[in-house]
Image (cartoon, rainbow, N blue to C red; front, side):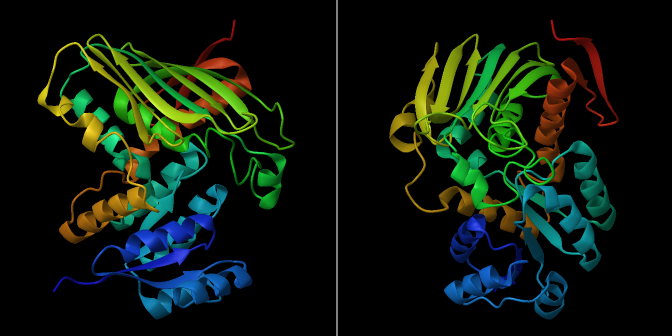
Length: 354
């Protein structure tokens, strides 16, 4: 019989419910404890799921001996929490983003690499069926020469949303809509289109009373020569429009839209292929099941832990999106084009925006 893989949750906010739902579907996994700095939230969560809660993370880890710690705290705390708990020598699952900037990301990764610990970052939309088929088409070179990759996040978040949690919309803990709401989409864009050469970006705060931006755009040049566009806002009114990605190449075009890159909108190629036969019937949407793609992600993580293999979205892979997000914010702040050094040593700038 397989060993039971034990998980413990650090943070009991909204996303923690999906972690419980997903892990409960996977055989031989168990959530052995939960902790939140709000003891009332932790107690309520504990009672709802019959999982023990603890007054602090250290006592929870010492008493339950988990293999994996799920870091579900606000984004600005991710690096801090990993570095404070790494002494227990547990693997980590971290909600997006891994950290709010490249420096914090590398500090966390370097320390875990030094101790032989894995960091898995929650990018569940990579497992959406239309997204997986899009990546498969790219890997089969069906697009030919890449031309343009675009992501659009047109969501509606009102002031009440930001006021609901004190960390939302703050530079220190939220980071902004590129780091928070668009993090998944930027990850998908880099996963599809490859290494980024440079980016030029602009941000604005149009409707919200917050520290960070509520609207932004970025123009990317990939090392392949293809271009990329990121369009993001939480100031769409009166309601959400889309969260989508489009990939265009010399031999085809694909768009995956819906609210959260969950519905196939366009699948056009100049030459037929066997994968086209059932694309619309079997792979055009995500099953209507709570935390379905989180479940697929956790299956991948559990397999990686059991077999000692690399997971699809371990820390070094998730670093790529943070590197681009970091460059986007530098560009917007300095009003300069930012060149990415893919060794991670530095990020260079050139002429101001014209």
